[in-house]
Image (cartoon, rainbow, N blue to C red):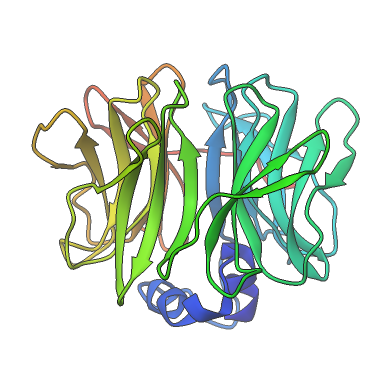
Length: 299
């Protein structure tokens, strides 16, 4: 359980929910299968970066969308998670506990060198890039509550963005930078919320008493995908911000999580345990057909 919770990279207060997800399939056996989680697209849509515990700790890997050219990126003693590719294609941001606490790092792909951006004993996690590739959104519990922060990649200067009694996490910019989507934990409920920065309004997306989480934008900024337990199991839903009905994309008894739509809007990568372990799957956004991502044998 501890190994899996480190790979999923969640604060200690979320462990009961992690246990619920892990118990959904045959994953607590002594010889647990490999987890491949938290996928994200390269800006050209040609590759996917993700975290895997195939070597015992969470490390970062990339592969092509056809499953070929599996490449290991990190070789740290800790757990590296939540990777996200910079819009200019040159770097990957992630969080890691490689130096004790969980902090934000940036990996330069040209050199393989990782730079630590945050230095705090509290939990800093789930970074996402500004479209200009110069700063990152992330959440931190450094003030006793999960709040959103921004850090400059160049100067490492921090700015706190939220001050609430609820918990905010898993935030990302819209492509035009006029809005953020984030996950809000409040009074035992978890919702997906859009923060319109021009109007300073916070609007829940298809609010429901079940847990909605792990949101991400479609490239045009007009819709979101997120995971929800509103149907009893974790499925992935598409929310059109223009008011169209919410659409359940996966409708599967397994846990389907962590959706990300490709830059061309044609393919969604997500994580599911429908094959017995959490692994990567692709869905065509036009036909809604799903296939597993086939990989080369691990190194």
